[in-house]
Length: 187
Image (cartoon, rainbow, N blue to C red):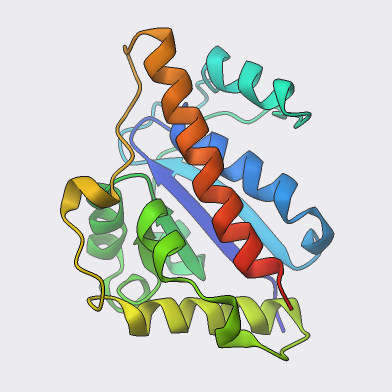
């Protein structure tokens, strides 16, 4: 199977999406040959470095932030993704607008996917790429079964927030990524 491609999206691609991308990459390190991760922002200014708070947070967790620069979300990125994870509903919707046919069943918010993904959907499937495809299908099939309000699935933008609020947002993303990675790793 070809690699499984995950695209993480937020607004500026300097806080939420690069953090989720780096944490997912770290959590799924054993699948680095099979899972390709990238991130983008719906309003990103190309080449901006990730926020210093994000880089510091990652280093504090033993995760190398890398030399990522922000980039703007494109139709091609969405069409090449097997899973699109948006920080907020608006990011998921932006992906769907760019490629409705491709993204409708593959785009989720971070929290939404963490709630819907079930490792048992792919029980017994050994090939990681095939497993991840099955997990996304299972989550998509479950969509609508859980009643969640928009605020319940969004991770608010920490841009301009005081440091304690920024840290709270980063920890929230870390917890969500851990739930997603655990479901994807369990065989």
